[in-house]
Length: 120
Image (cartoon, rainbow, N blue to C red; front, side, top):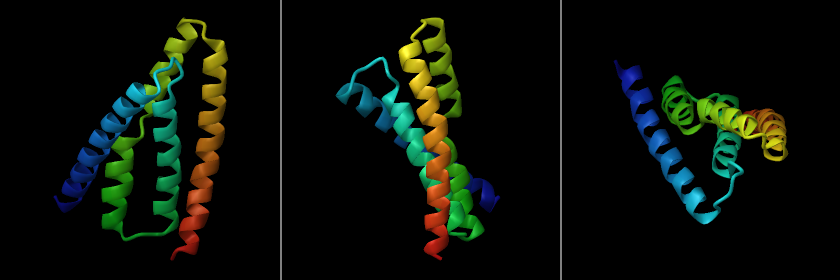
């Protein structure tokens, strides 16, 4: 039960953080490019790598990794936005969004893990 509570608390704060950041980004930088989702997912990739690389206790991994990062990052929104960009034939936005998201997401997760290993 304790594990479920850790994931739930982390998920609550991750979800409201994503909602707040996305709303702020849309208000501050209105654009057809999904900048909010991109920054959320890149930040989440780095932070999840950092959490895993630092080899935190299981309770912290559940709270921060599974809970917070699981709710903060958004693979489903990323996919939906790409489908919408494809449907609207916004190739000049869709292709860079895909390339940057995957390339830098993986790179930042790797950098986060390496940095986390040095923080132990």
